[in-house]
Image 1 (cartoon, rainbow, N blue to C red):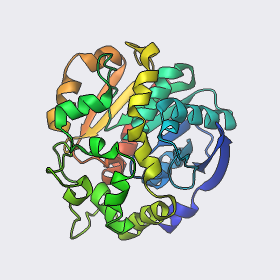
Image 2 (image 1 turned 135 degrees about the vertical axis):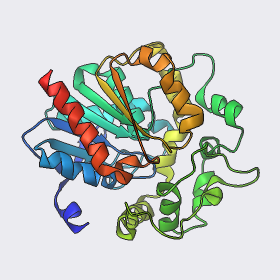
Image 3 (image 1 turned 90 degrees about the vertical axis):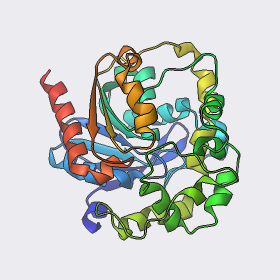
Length: 322
């Protein structure tokens, strides 16, 4: 872990009116932007930073707004995909990069899809992990869709009320909260039993899986102890506002080359994501897409780092040849 921490340069960059912390490994090759999810920081990409860096790529992994050492605006309305993409454009401009490869996991995948949707001129190719590109339903806002589909106790629904998830998380120390999320092995939708908070329903493993150490988990815990969880939770609380603002892009497609990676034991994979991937809609919305199914769970870039790095590198190399 020490080499992972010392092997990168850290910068605070002013972009889109806020300070964004980035970890950078500077090679002479193509520029690759790595976007983390919930509840993570740039650290979730440390394997890929090393692997991509060893191939000579110029790798930048920010703490997205609301996370880690980046600014955390207080209002949930400051966390729409328009804000996040604007932050990313500010980073690309700072590094004088006109067109880049973008890799995102979880909410980072959603951000990568929207960067590709809004500004395809700035994206050479996208690798999205765990979260596919979903169409915007013009008739129903996301929170109502999730409520109708899964009831009031889906984690996304519980996260909507300001302060509710924070109070639930606060019953545990930060390391326990991180373990409950990052080491998740549930494969069905994250719905708590009636009257229970989702954090109470998630298990704390008695022993760690071989792919992560106590020291790595503590790195996350220490950062969230400083920042709190509200910034990350505000992404969920801005979903409906993003939906409203996305109306002009109704029916728009992702036109850049794409690869989608998911673990076969990811949350909701068999019941929700797999049928969507196997249907025609995603291929219609993302015509130039390759889908890769790996053996693993939600935090697959940490659980299966070599395989994920290989998929990213092979995607970049293929596009470079073409």
